[in-house]
Image (cartoon, rainbow, N blue to C red):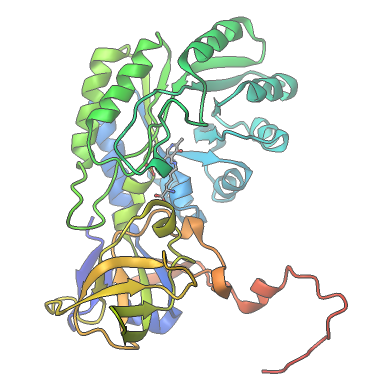
Length: 419
Ligand code: LLP
């Protein structure tokens, strides 16, 4: 995707919008997305998969970018959508996603969310445990198609926090239990097992674990649908070497040809690799401090990139007003939150950083907005969608009024201070 470019004044652009201009208009921090980049990646996945495996679906793992505009793009580009929980389900419905194209996940689904899913007619529910079966049996009025999630016992080489396929994973059922359940459900009046699901982890930088995942599902027997989850990684720094989407699709479909029936449906659920590269996060430098190290502190941090604390992802930063100039400085690019782990880039290479400068973090379109939080009173940044030089606020910035509103003020002075 042509996510970013360089404008006439050497500034960073996204979707042909100048980042310094976006900052003037919307302030910092902000998340900016190249809408065409998102669309192109969605198409690359969908066309690439259906060319190799016609009976297939690409489900946008919406946890990676849960904003209405992204759900709407996925729907427009012919993707299905993976929702985990009632909140994501409601976002998908609010964006106009066809319920038939929804896949509902969750290892702790509530009665209310299963009830809602059944009422709106969600296409597939992924069963994680026997409690799901009890709720479905109780609440289903027609027949609900389900996939059974298994623990694949594949240890993909990624951060343990996002490896989900190992033996002791909390997600899904061990293979023997899953097989017994599938047997039991054969004559169930309301639950139709359409197939099986697994997900081996996230930010995986090789293709072999995905091929292994397909083989694990194939060994479970013949089904209509095989869903291998998401997990393909992206390059955050020069040291990463993520497989291309093509290489990933080659690997999974080649494995599928060996392992599953030719007419079966193959589903993939990419999140990060679908959206990360089309997004940047933009900050203003608050100060530059030479203490026992050189620190460049910006006006965001863990409050908008919590994944730096969850998974040690470390991004690549550029000075958005002068991208082409050769970096002359190595510094710790830190946020403003009260945690030492609030480190956005370890040994960032920057050109002449000064207070007031604008810094952009590349490839941060996935799982940034997802984990947005109010740590140290930070407000949720806006999400700006950019295309052909036009920008729109897909999600506007939270206000201090909204930040304070949920608190009960009973017994507190009405207007203690004016400012
Ligand atoms: N399908 C299922 C069932 C999942 O649990 C996930 C992600 C995906 C698909 C999409 O995986 P992706 O293609 O994005 O790797 N906290 C982490 C990310 C957690 C991913 C959770 N599950 C982070 O910030 O990096």
